[in-house]
Image 1 (cartoon, rainbow, N blue to C red):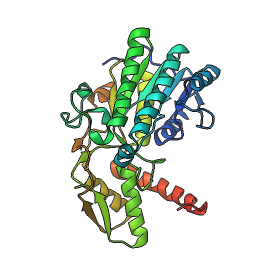
Image 2: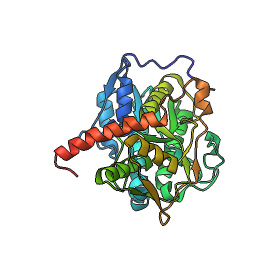
Image 3: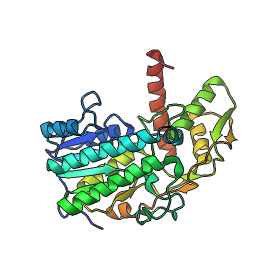
Image 4: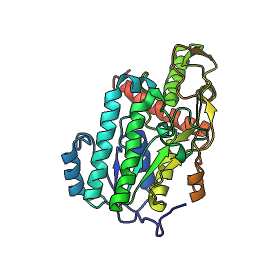
Length: 324
């Protein structure tokens, strides 16, 4: 398994976390706090990542030596189906601007953050890295997936042509502090936490769940993801991208039942069969990463309890500020 002959040293380096206000970016900031490095960030007000000249100017001024690319437009099935142009344009533009500028300005190391949705809808399970581009994508998120595949290929192309030390990692479904709890545009974990919490607060004994609840997924706690990303930044160098997951799978119904137990809600789930299930099964083969010496540490129930604690704290702040 390719690794750097000499591990990439973060000590004393300027590390830009692009997308630091998102769930993954914020977790990366927490993880990097224990490294002896200077962390660079830029809010959207300071830097519009879809503007190429702005990105190049900012990077030329700040001179990052390493970049973790966590910036992206993300969302669940509803968001992908409602805003396909936004998902493909914004993600293509962001990754192209950052990766090209990193090449031009001589950035030492870049880690592109992809997504497990890059794999074909019916690829053999568990999903191995070699399954990329072996079949049609899942239609409910193909716009996002196409952009993420392009990001992988950009890293590979700049490595091949210019020798850039650009790598890519593909996390599985993430959850944890900082997740998006919008009632329509959130992913499965956050959407179910919100629904079950609201049902408990309202004294309801039923929660409607999209689809059959039978599809299986794996869920990675975002702070474990951040630890894996920093591990790869420091120790991995190859054009082959790396899956980042747990190797454990749970049905959506099992996930919902675990969330109900964490929240303390004792109602039942009702299935809305008019809504799509999405990919029938999605669990990743993370043997490449495991062989490098890394594995996730947080169990599902423990991670969900952490995520719900964050939700309660920030929900209380939102209500206090006059939100709903």
